[in-house]
Length: 497
Image (cartoon, rainbow, N blue to C red; front, side, top):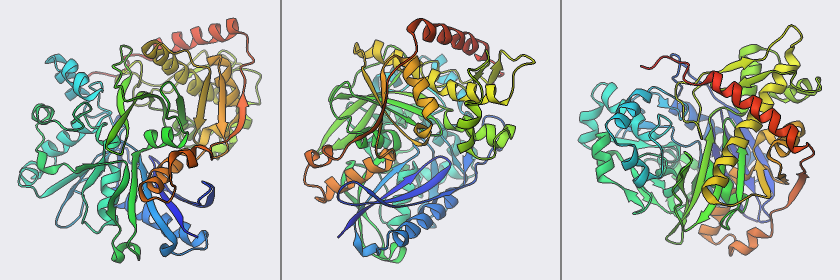
């Protein structure tokens, strides 16, 4: 038998999963890595540590599956998006820490571009809003602030990449500098209509084209692993940003289908087919994937802090010892006791796009306890998702009847039931919640003929549980109104640089 290896490089951990031909998980390995916070609003990763943990878990998962690297038919890569790496082509060494998608250091630069009247220009070509979230202004910051970087970049000595590009560079021993269309569409430098880097966008951001990777399809051999690095020559045949990969793994391939991933952040995508639907409600238009020479598109809403609020309860407040304990603590109280937590630790994403919002806990009384705070934290995830869905329905004109969900937090039944209650639609949890990795595996397998066609993989998707809304709509609307009041208190709090 042969298998597909999915490398799932996330914001807080690197994972590797071996899938078999039935789309079942044969083994999993995972390792967390260091989060670097040099000052408020800044978030960094050590790109070498990302490579070390990702290559480490790849070796570990092969051993756990009881196979060898020669049993791997193809590799699929999915990754935290927008996180920006700049490295020396000759040495392969990063010039500085990677700037993470959560980082807000370029908020002022984005404000300046907006003030110069560039917002509509960027939106029309990229489908994105001008925000520090995306890679383009992060790369510009590196070129301007790392000594010698700009001159080296203009001379062609440097390579920029999102995490997919960095991993493929390392896996191929420096032979391949590529990215796929889904990741490229998150950079502010990619024209979603032409499907390529845009020279006018690059000129505005002052970024030399020489640093950019070649754009390839999301499915199909893009590179091969180096024998010296991986022990065998294996095609890297699936590449997609984590949220697009989850959309593919959830089999949301028909226009109007929606999935939401509950990870460090929350990400809701609606498949729009071959139409790049422009949002009127501050959502993003993004490339879902490029397969067989054609781009599919999606509407997307991004919540910056979802599962990360549980990590904060653990590491910041210390009211739980492990993330898994949050469910029991939240269930120890009948309701939130009037407590609302807005986890705007790094600003707010869609649909507010407020880089200056900050975290707030409101409604505290002497009767408030750790259970109320834990419950408010979980509920904050559901409220943010509801805000996204409202905007998405307004943009698309489609009223949803079902939300497909995936990611670690979906294992929390209390959260999933509250999500269904607040939305008023059924929430469907699949048997395999690792749909991000599964999507990358499917793209790799389809790109190498491991699976013959999409019908074969469509037949593999199964629901594990359906959460039906049980709350009266009047009650849900009352709770949502209180959430909006709390949201208003958190808005525009931090000082503008």
